[in-house]
Length: 90
Image (cartoon, rainbow, N blue to C red; front, side, top):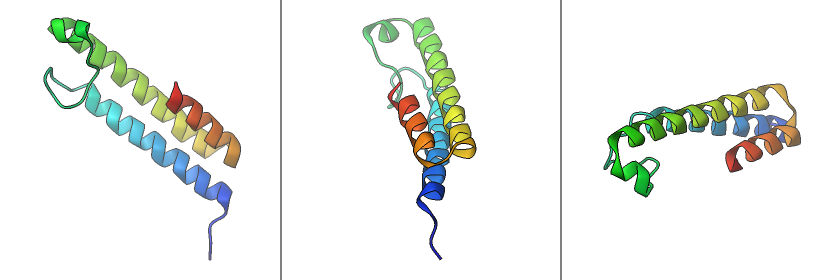
């Protein structure tokens, strides 16, 4: 018994979306000096800017992850993959 390519693409889209949600959830809780986060000269200079930047990154990543999961559930094969890759690149 084998899975069709369309089913595998849907599973991959949902898995990638779930990964984005998990990473986004973690980024929103990072403290300065951690091993993950949005590092720029501006975020390193101010704790307030650091916190707001990480919160924005969290919201964007979780939103993209939810859209990826929805694309995997609602669309067939190549269209789901195209949407997921577009969201990941954005």
